[in-house]
Image (cartoon, rainbow, N blue to C red; front, side):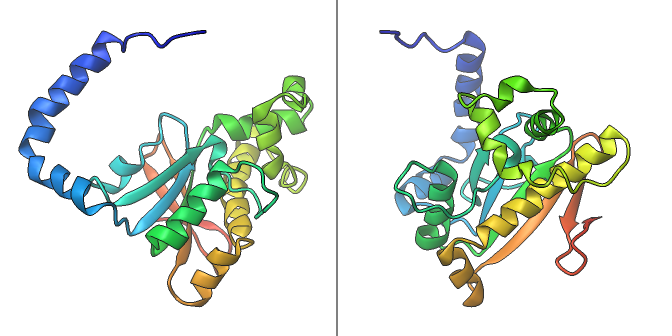
Length: 215
């Protein structure tokens, strides 16, 4: 049986630095959060890409966002089959227990998961076609959008597929009864965003045109 190894020294040192500075200056606030529980106003579904820093983009403090991260910020359709569904469980908890007012899907540029889907659909990633590939099976959520991509260079098509990942997740969110009911009751709004990492730009999905426009 494998046993965990000690934490790397650089992470230990960073922890001690955080506790001596940020925590020490805000001890009362952290104690308040611990005692009063979380009351986030919004849930953000973002990619697990290490370059996407949700709280930094919005200047958010502890307790403001309920964040779920997965490969390519995808939400599967509502599938109550008794199996394990991490993303669906997070959405259910955010909407029915935490009662967030806003549900945001945040996509981004140069997404490795979306590139994997693109390559898989192009026949360039046979390993992802294997039934044992967790990434390949997860990207099946987006696969149907590949054939509808406009003609153009690969970078343009990849950007469109990244944005289609956001649209697909929003469409799938509407298949969850508790999401659609909360929206119909005026208790929840959905938002689609796409982050250009290199340009530091955030674009928002316009519900009228279906296009992303810079904020």
